[in-house]
Length: 406
Picture 1 (spheres, rainbow, N blue to C red):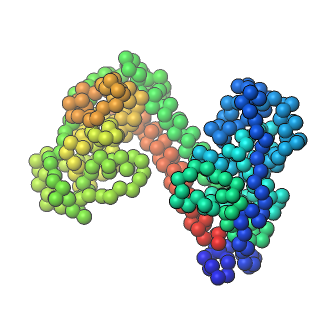
Picture 2 (cartoon, helix red, strand yellow):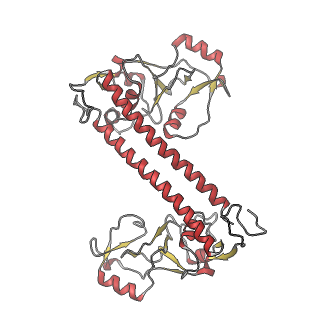
Picture 3 (cartoon, rainbow, N blue to C red):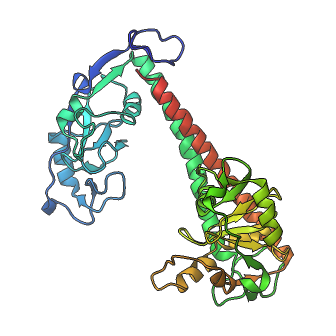
């Protein structure tokens, strides 16, 4: 940013004028609907009445059409495109008014009445990064008219406002499209986790692939797979490079697709420990045994890897399981219900080797496991692709917000 010239670091071609420093009060005034009293509302009716608690959500109060028409004609009312602001609670939330017959709680929901002195799409972007006057460092959860009107804003000529507003509008549309697809696929996955594994007390899933029939066989997990722990590694043996050393936080961060500070052990320490207990290899599972319990990590290859004792359980895959099938089992409604059943409070502090060994699991043929595993692997890949796009686009948006405004 060049402060001296009052121009942004990045701007669209053809725009060369300096931006103007103003306040929102220079552009307009704060407006709000006339007060509605509780006795004027009903739980069902003609016109939705949005209070601060239902702002941007589903209304739980209504007013009559006659009262709406009277107040709309006599008192301030937004026009399509105006940006409604929450002035209490989570202050500064924005809902674009699109011309619906809605009414809004006075003083808690307001808008800047500017009579076209600023482009609303540009103003909406500004609101997404605004620093309200008088509120910096304050714990006050209230946005007063003075806070709004005294807030500083730098504005370019109108055509540049429109170009910037349109750019961010298209960016938000792309983000929303990926978010909707991500949410839809996540909902499909949640439903399939209930329907493609038999429910407790049943031996046939509600949905299965063609060509497979017959009952699944119920066993305890420990009857089918070797469940182990690690030999202890002391913290002073951790290194800054070498063989990855997994802890609960590493498995959780991978599941949540978050960054986590990594730990390592030396190759010498790794080889010594592996000679005692064996090596973690492809399609083995590490399961969190403390904190956020029961979160799995499917080992993707045979590269050296070691893990913290007590924190993680090691399921040594003996090829009786398709790796992704077993991985998905730990997200299934069946497993989650089992975890609840072994605790009076619905949660347990630790998931131990002994508890893992007696965890019930229904199994089918390896061929059917592979079909199920492949299905969920493709579904997870699609969900991950959309999440990566959302993250990428949000990063682009944040970078542009810092460089396209003065």
